Image (cartoon, rainbow, N blue to C red; front, side):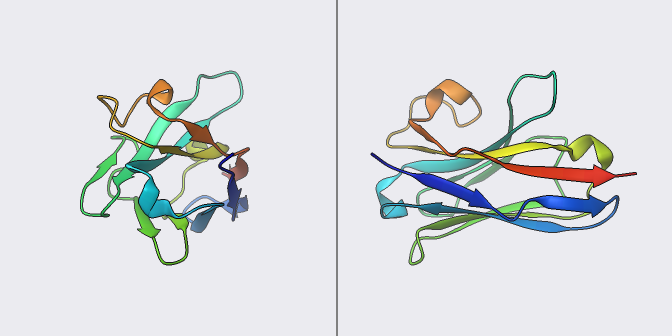
Length: 125
């Protein structure tokens, strides 16, 4: 069973930065795509960013475009999310996810096969 373990969350003031990491238990080159989602209290899980297997194609939610950067290091089997200019509305539990194949979308939660347990990001105003 594939395991994804997130780290790097924490408490940060508005305008600050965090780098989230997601370590995979197997080679990330075996995944067609990996992505980040987040879920704020009382809200549904939402798409944040995704990257294809080669790292050449990336997708971002409009709410984070220009502030967040997704990347992957296949040599380290690790996915990253560099989050800059953080806002209080970015407060959420952040989850990484991986898909074996392309299922028609990178933006939907049901298009991913594996999920981590999440890391909490809290942005204070």
